[in-house]
Image (cartoon, rainbow, N blue to C red):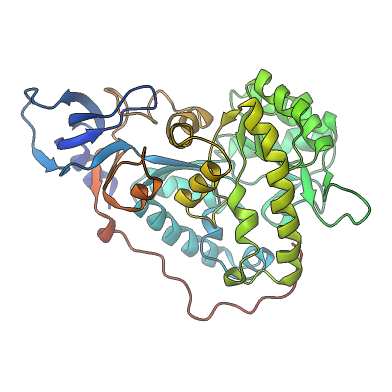
Length: 417
């Protein structure tokens, strides 16, 4: 779809009627209508209120209208990938782009209208972002770090820029921002077998290097996020002023309390470690066994996050469906209301777009979904999406190409990474 055609459709005035409207976690659901104009929510109305004249009326048929979902931790190139991840990272740039375009369309089909893209080989995520913004492809609105920073040989170095030392960290962070990144990401730990230690992870980046990354991000007015597990690495990240913690295995009570006091976002990604144990994904026996240990360690440390009550954000790390990740969090003790708040308004705060996203309120972008059922009673309702609207453009799930699994996945090697 060209940018000009996209603009024409955005100018339409549309009314979503006969709806149960879930504005946000602060408001009870009510029956009524939502009017959209010029790609934004123009007004909301209670049932029986007179409606303005519109170009198109869509009957929600009693479905729930709510904000479009936001995935706070995604990698578009990882979707539906079999075998050890390094096999995916070695694919050509052309293959990475093709995978990303298909994944983007499939992501939108599932009601996810925005994502925080957390790293891709060759910064294909920035290319995807530009294509989506220009209306060249259909997909979620993308907020991206470009390529994360890792130490030489560090965690997932294939999708990162390897940097060592304060000056190098500063230079690469600046380059990512110059290239269009919306935030900076660092790989502050690597999870690996440590037979003689209780924590199966090692810290990466010194405190001074992390402070340099934080300074560059904050001076540019953006956030710094960290892939980080292990108490030592977590402490360094909090000392450095990292804004969001991804994964956070081995979080203890003291560090959880510090996160709460500092207002640090927490994206636990419970599902990815579980998914890596499933034979379906063919990660290899050693990887599966190692991730089974991480799943148990993550569950044990997650208790501290629950007890303290952190600033919850939700992300999938690509492999796990977003609704499944939400259900994992509910199973571990979060309320449905907290999970729905996290995947809408708090995730919009994470990407610094809560002025435009995350709630059904006049003035915000018309990123909306219509689902059959009530997600406040059953998260399964989010798997029954009737309609997706992104900035006023209407999509039906069947109109968006589903991403089909390969019938003959690549043979997996037994690889811990």
